[in-house]
Structure formats: C-alpha cells, structure tokens
Image 1 (tube, rainbow, N blue to C red):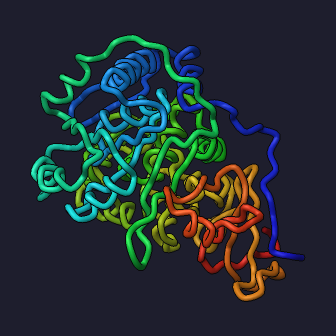
Image 2 (image 1 turned 180 degrees about the horizontal axis):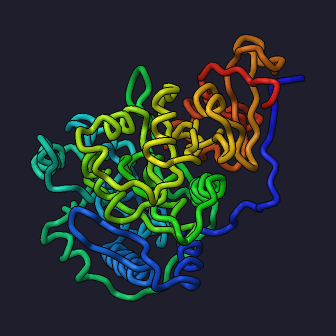
Image 3 (image 1 turned 60 degrees about the vertical axis):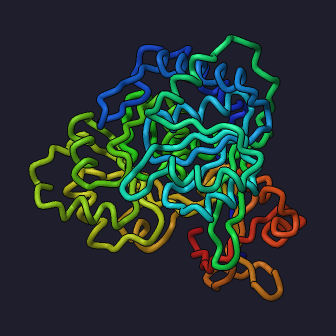
Length: 415
C-alpha cells in the first residue's frame, strides 16, 4: 500500500469569513463568556467581545485602514491582541504577526517586507522596550504611518475615532494573515493565509477534541504563532468556547492558577511547558480536576511525561498535533481514543479534508507504507503563498498544490 491517505468527514468545511463565523457564535450565545484575561481580571461575554471588535474595526477604517492593507501586531498575549485579530478580519485587513522576541533589525525587515502601514505594539515586556525600538526603526520604514501602543493613550485615541461605516465585501479566500517563518538561512518568509485556511483549521482541530460552548481553553502558548491564534482562539470562537489568557508569556504557576481559577477544560503547550508545570514545587496544591483535554505540539512527548499529563493533570483526551505555519498549521492529529503508544510514537492521522503522502525526495514518487520520505500535504490548509516571494512559494508548493514540508516521515500500515 502506498504512503497516501486523506481525511474523510461527514462535517463540511466552513465557507465563512472569520467575521461571519463570529457573528454566528454571538447570535446563539451572546451571554456566554468568550474571553478572560486572568492577569487583569477583565472578562468579555460573546456579545461584549463582538461589540469591542466592532468598535476597533470602525476605528481602523476611520484611520484609513482598507481591505488588503497590512496591520502589524508586535505584542505579547493580551486581550487587545485578540481584538486586533478579529477586528482586522472583520474589515479584510491583513494582520501581520510579529514575534515579540524580535530585535530591531528583524522588525524593520518585517515592517518593510509586508508593507505595514499601522502597527500595534506592547509598551514593554521583560527586557524589550518596544516604544524605543519602534522609534529606532521608524525612519527606515516609510510605509509605517502610525503606531498604537497597547495600554497607552494612543490605544484610546484610536478607539475615539470609531465611526460606524459599512464593512467591505469579503470572500473567505481573501488573505487575512501573514506569519513569518524563520528558515535556517536568510530572512524569514511571510506565509500568507486566508480566512478559509485558518478558520477551518481551528474549527477541525476543535472538532477532533470535541469542543463545545462548555469548554474553557487555557492558552499559555503565544498568539503570534498559529498555536495560539488558530488552534486556540479560532478553535474556541468557532465552537462558542471561552479563551483564557493566563499570562503575557508562559509562566507555569500562572498557567496552573488560571486552570484552577477558571475551571479550564483544555490546556495547550509544548512538552517542555507541561514538564515545567508538572515540576512546579506547588503542583500538588492546584485543583486541575476540570481538565479533560488539551493539545501538545512542537516536539515529541516523552512517554513518562504523557503518562503524568493524563494521570496527574486529568487530561485523558490530550491530543498531539503536527503541522507548520504554511499549512494553517495542523495536518495531523491524534484522536481522543488513541492509546499511549499512538500519542507518543506518532503524530496521529490526517485531519478531515486534507491529503498527505510520503514521497521519495529524489524521484518524487510516493513511497510504500513503512518507508521513510518527505511528508507532503494538500488541501484547504495550504497557504496562499509567501508574501511577495513567488520563487520561494514555487520551491515549497508544487504544480499540484502539494506543500513540501521538508520533514522526514514514515506512514505506518494503519495510516
């Protein structure tokens, strides 16, 4: 049997834009909690969240941001990050995620390569003074006409411009997000993603761990990455679940406290984050009994860690995901009833509506099952391309729209 499989499903792909999908959630559950920021104690119901998204969307349009314009966000996890994500989607602006760890030369490159006209930024975090860094590069970024700092009077000044106006006509295939991927050589490339790409990926990741409006998702992973903004935020809102922000950046105690305080049912992280939580000196004092599921991704999980996550953190249905930014990001995911061996020895099975194959990197032919080769994926999740880099896009996506991941894989007999 060849190393090819595809994800079948009785559930159709969503044909919505992100804004239309949020409207659906608001209409059916306006009074359910949508977003909780544990550090500040701020809370939003779906109705309140949608109203704040709309206010920011109107403010952006009044500030001259049009469909297709690039709006950058260079910030740590906070409620405003989520508002910017949904407000830009509402008006068809393309949100550009910028890693909060970037230094000035990196942010200057992204501001110019993406042509960002308006930038949202944190004021400071740890050793980073974002205001000073923006001032340092502003002269070299001619397209950047305004910077809005979160938690600063400039945020309130922006909102004060909000004037109701018709939203532009949008298609679910419009580009909506650029995420920069750091290659081993050269400058990062801007993976360009549509509503259809990321809304469906978040939705189906949530479907496979059975999210409902009863779920409360603790998201200590960064929003600037797909793990936070797609697998976290979009999985939540497409199911009417609640997003819980434990801290601006990962802190094991803050994460454990958020799960306990907010009675979270799901927790995200890479294996080292779960290890840090399990090894916290006060771990045994936290009540984590509300947890049932979560997502672990980024690297393989050691067997002993998985055993402890299931037994001591009550995450019996924890899921392993594999993907890459260019595929929105998830292509493969373990299922709720998979055993320990599947969760630690594999990266699961293909998601619904996605194809995967393993090919000989020299000939391009599909390998027999059990033979190693390059993993390729195809389907709704494959990015539109790298922003303004058609040659690099063609190096990664072939004529058949297969995304060549560059990762070595073996497809087992069971798929």
